[in-house]
Image (cartoon, rainbow, N blue to C red; front, side, top):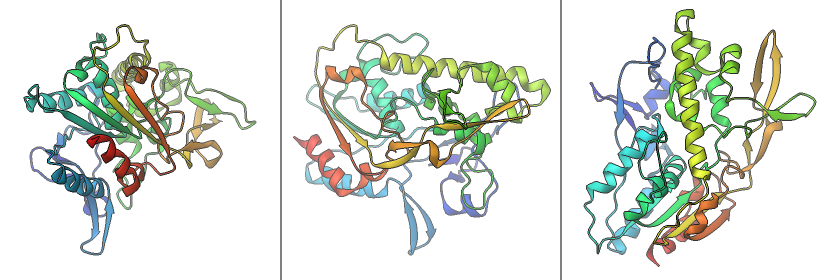
Length: 356
């Protein structure tokens, strides 16, 4: 959840955010008036969104947490969660995770098991190998293994998500609030850029079916085609927006390169690692390209759908090569992105892994 730091008002997510408000979640782009200057801060794990009290609510992590509370109580395990601002630069999120883990003051006899889903699983895949080091100067130190004894990574987008590039163009309109998760929101989220796939894996498709890279790592294309925040920039803001996008794409490139880098020194410990990937659901991935005047635009349609869990594609969810340094168990499920974590059959696999 996210709330306003000054007033404490919840901005993500309750029903009124979708139906009665016209406020978004944008972050400010330095040197511009693009996005909001109002600071939002994490306010706990989002369990569900109550639409009609006692009659209708939409689950997020509520079912998962309920099952884990029962499991940890029965097995005399302490349950703790960490919430970070999912809009932020990945390194800022990693620092929050690192601070939370170190706050436990673990002793030699203690064992820390981590269960992570989606973005959290992607962050943990970096943390195990590099800790919370900044991508600009990270070296392989296996810092995460000093603390974590078991890790379960569920539905991680390990190789990027093109769908975030769509969201920067069209947003994901939710109910009556046109500003919530608009293209402006996504274009200012630092995390959006980290989610984008590595260079050459950003696939676009011409009307004749020919496929090639969309070129999202070329800053000139962003500016020329008014992609992302450029469509919101005044002439005097173009330079600042260019610097912002260029910086974020550079950091994204370094993040993915570090995840894929060959192992230099194998860790001294070999922890159990569970990785579950969802398959069997049409998942948007390939952009259909079209030209309007002198701009290159794109749309994501059913024609560009591939196999996945409905959010993360099968290719993006594939395990990283470095996982083989662990006692690794990779499982493919036929469940969707949230169900692969929350459904009882998935929870049984996860809980059996944690307690064995």
